[in-house]
Structure formats: C-alpha cells, structure tokens
Length: 321
Image 1 (cartoon, rainbow, N blue to C red):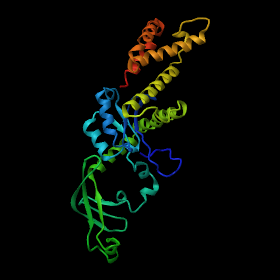
Image 2 (image 1 turned 45 degrees about the vertical axis):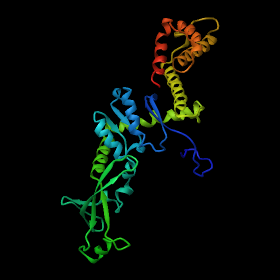
Image 3 (image 1 turned 180 degrees about the horizontal axis):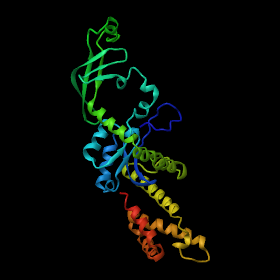
Image 4 (image 1 turned 90 degrees about the horizontal axis):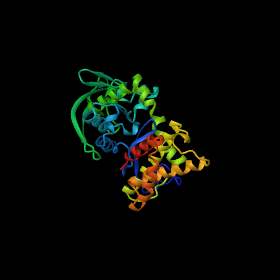
C-alpha cells in the first residue's frame, strides 16, 4: 500500500498494515491490523471486534475523523449501535462550512427546493424529478438509492433553455440521495451542538499523540516481524509499553512507594522494573523454561506495597490477544 512517508515522491508501494487503535485519555484500549489502505472500510470490523471483547459497552461516544464518515458507516452506527452517540464528520463537512462553498452557485445545497419536488438553480433553470436509480457499492455491497432530477426541454426563456443543456446537447441531470442527506444532516447537527464540539475537540489531543509517540519517542517506524499474527504481537507489546509508561507518569508514584529500600536505591529501581516486565511477558509470550524467573519474581511482587501496581500490569497485558 502507499505509505505517508514517500521520500522519492514516486508513489512507491510497500508491504504494510493499516493500524486502527481506539483510545481514551491517550490510553490504547484496543487495536487491530487491516490490509485496507483506507480507513472507512476498517470501521465496521474494528467496532465488531471491540463489541465482542466487551470494550465498546464501557463507552457512550464514538469519535473519529472525516476518513470514517461515509453513508455505509453512518448506516452501520444507526442500525447496530443506535444506543451510542457518534461525532464523526463526513468528508465534505469542513468544506461545507466555508463561505466560498455557501456562495457557490453550482452546489445543489444552495439551490431552491420546492415541496412539489423540483429544484431551481441560481440561474433559474428548473430540475424536475424523473425517476429513481440504484447503485451498488462494489467495496461494501451496499445498495444506494438515488432520485434523478432532469431539466425540461423547454424552459421559461430561450436563454434558460440553452442553460438547461450540457455542452453535448443533452438535458442536465442531478442525483440526490435522501438517505445520505438525512445522515449528513444528523451528523452535522451533532457536531455543531455544544456537547458535540467539546467531545470532537478532544479527539486530536487524545488520538493523534499515540502514533506520534510510537514513532518519535519509542522509535518504532517499522515492525520487527513478518506476518499479521506476529506483527500484532509486536505492535501489542509496543502499545502495552506506552500504556504502562503513561500510567506511571500520570500516577507520579515515587520508587519508595513500591520498591524495597536499600543503600543502592537506584539499582533497586532498575531491577524491579526489569522483573515486572519479564514476569508480564512470561504470561503471554515467553516459553516454559522462563517459569523459574517468573516464579522467583512473582513472590517478590506479593509485597503489599506493590500489589496495586502488579494488578494494573497484568490487567493491561490481558487486553491484548
């Protein structure tokens, strides 16, 4: 697929996966890998995965950028996740808010619509409803219903009659999708509400730093393994590490709160961090001959001052497959 980093500017294709991650307060709660280069086709399977794991039940709002806003994804949310609120703009949402778009005479949204089901453009040409049409989306299999409006052969004046035709001499047509228009209006209403603005405004500061930290702070720009299952393990360990690091930074726990005091306190801190990380890896990833290392350090982790820390670590590890 095409990567964002294209130093040669030649559209070179590279093997890779599209990583989808769900976050809350910059903690990664779930992730998945997809071979699809576009985001909107990953939306439904990722939501299904979160629902099957019971993660989605803990959240009321689903927030995403315009790359996920499509008629198909909105329909999925309305049908299968009607109990959730979603703040997801469609592709043209930001553009439609501009003054230039609102004054553009070629946009159907700026035309006059009559209840007798006809449109009149800015130059006065009338478009009457002609027939219904259907299109099947090849990527999703969704059938989209359209209303076709066409200009009459004879308008009020000769000038309008000429404007009602294309350059090839055919009558001008426009397509209108009632379902898509309804979903767009609902999304627009949600995004323009005070609550919607507040929630969607937090998306950039919540989601975007995750991949920035993974690349810049942790230095992971490429995976170390091949194959989807192995790459999932590789990325899962990275996200786990990021969660633990953020948890420690947010709690601001001093080493003396959960480490044994001794004269070489700094060395004790490094040893205990290493022990906790190794013991966690043994649960999911390491072979059986590491069991001695785990058992030895497990008894040390039973110290009452670090019980909460151990619980958090194992709970975090259990979130990843």
